[in-house]
Image 1 (tube, rainbow, N blue to C red):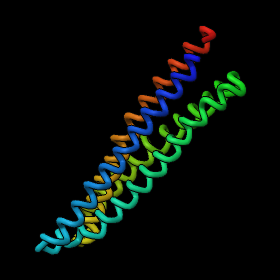
Image 2 (image 1 turned 120 degrees about the vertical axis):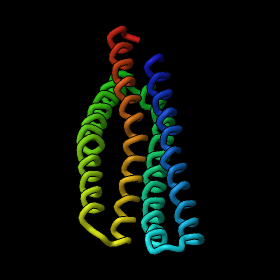
Image 3 (image 1 turned 30 degrees about the vertical axis):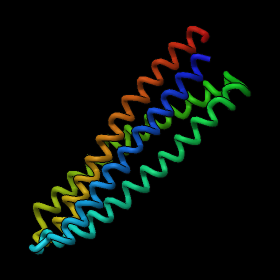
Length: 169
């Protein structure tokens, strides 16, 4: 039963964490509205569309992860009560898969995308491109921030799950 509590607590923490994607999406929406209403310069006006796109992307990511993890919380108890060993094994598989995705996407691809965006800022002199790349960098940093904490949380969850599993709890 301790394992079920651990898994449920982890999933609830993930539900809470995904709200930060939506919070940052709201900040991008507000920024877009401010640039649209108050932007007088060419570069300020160029931020309107990129910040709306970043808002949309972060909101979709946040809502999707929120729904997935909210559903997972409800499914944990059913799966655990049906077959505790199968539940634990499936959690190990899911954790390993998620850690590998973080390793590849969050900690390799996203930093490369940030570097590429920074290079575009350096070499392209267009306001639209610069605004787009600066917004892209801000959005990717937001993803790194939220997913970096999620990576730490799932690694800790794995360690605790292994400890409980070894103790036979």
